[in-house]
Image (cartoon, rainbow, N blue to C red; front, side):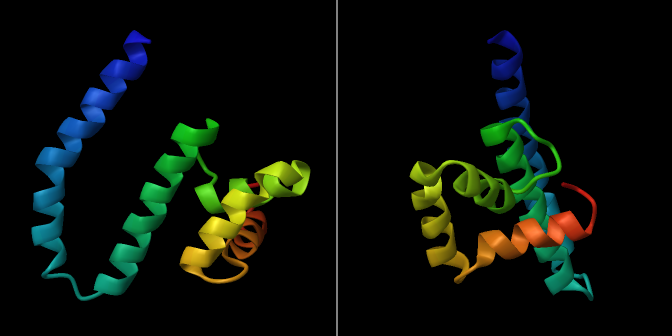
Length: 102
């Protein structure tokens, strides 16, 4: 429990102090779209680590795997697909599988 609390505090502090610097720096990047896509995937992987305990899987791909194994969990996949477009979780899983992360 203590390790989790320390990790949570560290994440909050890093977010508070690093995020403004990163946001300011991103204004001067040429490849802003690619940069923000990478940042979004990073946050997704952190979410996957927190939710599922796996470091390389995104929330979307792991949710697709869980839905395939446990039909009662498919509501979360439908929710994510509603937000990001139909088939998002399945495409995410297939992309990670193609890259050898799965």
